Image (cartoon, rainbow, N blue to C red; front, top):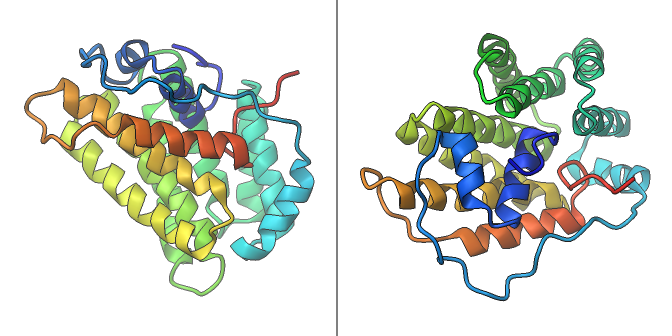
Length: 254
């Protein structure tokens, strides 16, 4: 699959932006057949990210997200370690974040993404127990954090990502109805994050992925309800994140 070295969410969005349904769906669902020719011509292709001052962009987001800038910087560093496939370093990094910010949910969320990414990269479920443990811990921590006023846009974003990753996990196991349910939960959280922090472009990735992969899966499985073909809309949302996002943009070329 194109971009298998990237973190899970970027791997899936890269496949979508390349309009490579068949290669991607084989990884995600085990080889379903997807209808062709549903995408209109003229959609812009995936663009290589420009060089940006990530430090300044992270600092600028701290206010709208109501989050400690240091937490954002360390979160970004963890994502970069996943991009580089430095999984051992990534695990140590997210464990340290769990110790430093135990109520933020970032540490277990990062570890859940790490284990799910390794499983997808190797086409297996070898780390499912570890993934489930960290995913559950992240969701519980974030749900508790939402009960107190504070960083709701950031917490909603992380919850949306957790629900989105779980949706993908269910899809990989061919549990399609639970996968769609988790996808809807993800969109609900991300919609709140977008409303509370409109400048946080990364929150749009979940929408794009859900619209794209919901179409891919439901169009390929007659037993599932039809939602039409929303792949073009999903691609456009992912391209917005690719251009404007901070955490979930494609890595800059070396």
